[in-house]
Length: 214
Image 1 (cartoon, helix red, strand yellow):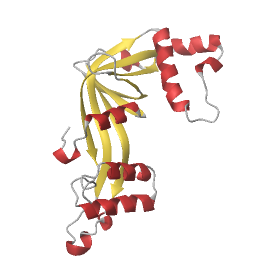
Image 2: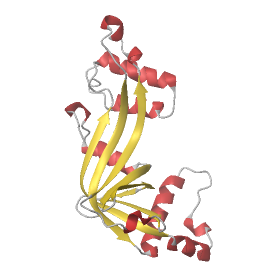
Image 3: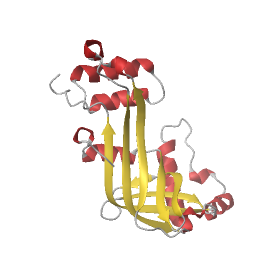
Image 4: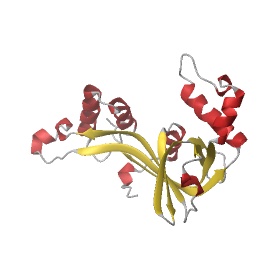
């Protein structure tokens, strides 16, 4: 992935992205070409040498059983938003401005390990649902499902683990713009309020390279 210096995040920002990711794209090269599956992953930072992403997929999806050529890649996405040049104060000065797209993403590479083990999968599902149910007024728990039903469900999935070898992350959040343009982007996003706008506005503010001196 091409990552200009301005858009290179620090380790703490990458850790935050991986910890709070939603559904991501598992991509592998097989003897039948590239195969991709959208999966919700959990980040396990203490697994292996560089951490791991753990998840599960339907047994009926043959992606998990296809031999992988080389490493697997997981495309993790954060919030994203269209940025109009009308938010730049400098546009009114010289009109040398074009639209762009702000986004947060990471390409996570590593060896793919399949866990055909109901106990491993159940533990992963408990971690996954525990995180996503945490802010619910009435959080659902695996223990609410009848045991026989749960065992049947667990037989229908297999565990997936990507043992991380490296991460390439890019936080493109207007860091290449002058301070007044960045403030214009934040104000524009907060005012527009489309999906992800508030999250992108907060990220632009957090990664504003001019913040300490402005």
